[in-house]
Structure formats: structure tokens, C-alpha cells
Amino acid sequence: MPRFSVCVEMVFRPLPFVERLEAVARAGYDAFEFWNWQDKDLEAIEATSHRLGLAIAAFGVSGGTLMEAANHDAYVETTHRAAEWARRLGCPSLIVTTGNEVPGTPREVQFDVLQRGLERVARAAADGGVVAVLEPLNTKVDHAGYFLDHAVDAFRLVREINAPALRVLYDIYHMQIMDGDLIATIEANLDLISHFHVADVPGRHEPGTGEINYANVFRRIDAAGYVGFVGLEFRPSGDHAAALAAVRTLAA
Image (cartoon, helix red, strand yellow):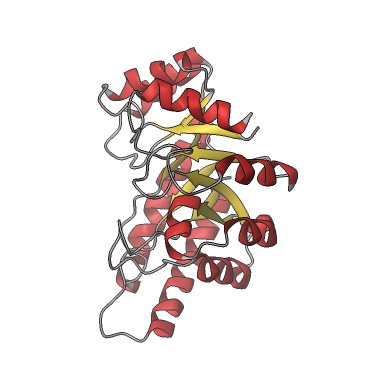
């Protein structure tokens, strides 16, 4: 069974933030993740996670856009500060998003700008002792205008930059919408993947509610030797604890 991490931005969202960690522990999970860090009480998160024995799998850099060179300095500085907190929290991964495409600019020019920014982000992550995980997102349903919307482009960037502190966050929900061919893509590129996100299609609900054969996907990820976290970043279709229990049953 994969090592799951509960995304408490979507699961247990009705609860106050720190109480969501209590709910994760009650549900029998041992790790969680979140999005922005700048708006969180990180000291409270640190104390509560230690008390409950919960690992923090990932959180977002939240540095704005990498598609504009003028923002690279700010993004890198934010990465440095996020990495300091990640190291303090024992968190191995920082989630990196690219920002939206720049209208009127050729795509290859935008790739060059993004690659230069990611090279600097990778160095900042390495300096902080963490891994930056680059996330492609779907542009058909949730993130219109986002630049990096295909996994092949994320893998291309990570291969070309060739930095151990830069890897891919492969979100199975987003990539089913954009590309399909999930298992073959995962198995061919597993050396470049350091984090997964899961939700079913359509609806972004828990695995088992849609078209993705998650039982098989989980088995194949395990069989391929993946040892990192699999983030449960879904919108529960009903009771949140029951949705988490269903995922565990599906993955058994």
C-alpha cells in the first residue's frame, strides 16, 4: 500500500485548520500536506504534528509566477524561506507551480524563462535540503491559462535541468484529464517523480468514485518500487472520514 498523505486543504476542510490534523490522526493516517504556508500558524502545526506523530509530506512554495523573469528573485527568496520551514517541520518536498502563460509570447520563449527560474528554484531547494516538486495542472476544468498542463513538458524540464533537488509532482487527476495513459507514463518516468496527488475523474472526489482504476494504479506504483508519499488531494463526496476509509480499502 502506498504511504498516503491527507491534503487538509480539501479533506476535513470544514474544521479549523489545526483540528484537521486531529481528524487525520483519528482516521488512521500518519501524514498530511497543505498548500500555502504564509497564511498558516506554522508553530501550531509543528507542535500539533509532533504531538500526534504525524509527518508533513509537502506544502506549496506559493511564490507567485515563474513565467515572468521579473518575479524570479521573489520566487527564489520565497523558496529559501519555505525551505527553512520545511527543514524545521521535517517536510521533504515543496510544491512548485509555474503560473499562467504569457499571452502573445511564443511557447518556447516561455519555456526558456520557466527553465531559468526552475534552475534557480532547484538550487534554493538544494541549499535548504529539500526537493522542489514541479506540478503540471489541467487547463480543461480547474486551471484555465496555467502554463504547464502536460506531464511530458514537466519531465522534459526536469531532465534538462538535471538537478537532484527538482522532481515532478504527478497529479493523477490532472493528468487523466489532460493526457490519460497513466500507468505507462508513471512507469516510464518514475525516477523523476517524487510525489503523487490523487483524485478521481470526473468531480475530483475520492478514488473509487469515477473512471480511474485506482486499485490497479496503486498496485503498479507499489510494484514499480515507489517509496514516496501519495497525496490524497480530493473533494470528499460525502463523509470525509468515510472517504479516507474507502481509499485505504481500495489500496489494500
